[in-house]
Image 1 (spheres, rainbow, N blue to C red):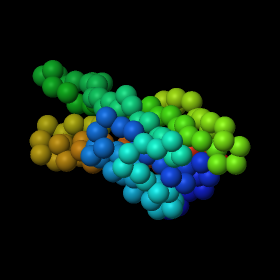
Image 2: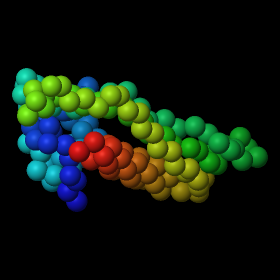
Image 3: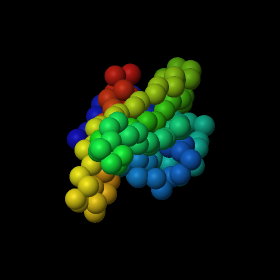
Length: 143
């Protein structure tokens, strides 16, 4: 769905370590759905959305009697900030660095190794989509 984002974001450049990362692609699609024009290069008259410190990790929470992992916690985190000119006053519009982190528990089935890999991958994809929604909601709250 579309979000009501700050007017200062009408033209936005996404500054990320990898512009081809899955999270950046998902965020770009969501921003375009909200009628934001995305630029390929930074511009003095456009907002700059910085994405950094993207990390994903897996932590074993419990093991079985043979010492094999049974339950893990998957986490996905990212930091972002936004800055750009305000069209009316010419001042700088800024949203300071915000850190977001999502965690999900994952139960490992030793009988279904391939299914575990698919399930883990699917959980990371769902967390990535949740992070995109959280970023957009945080930006919308500043509109």
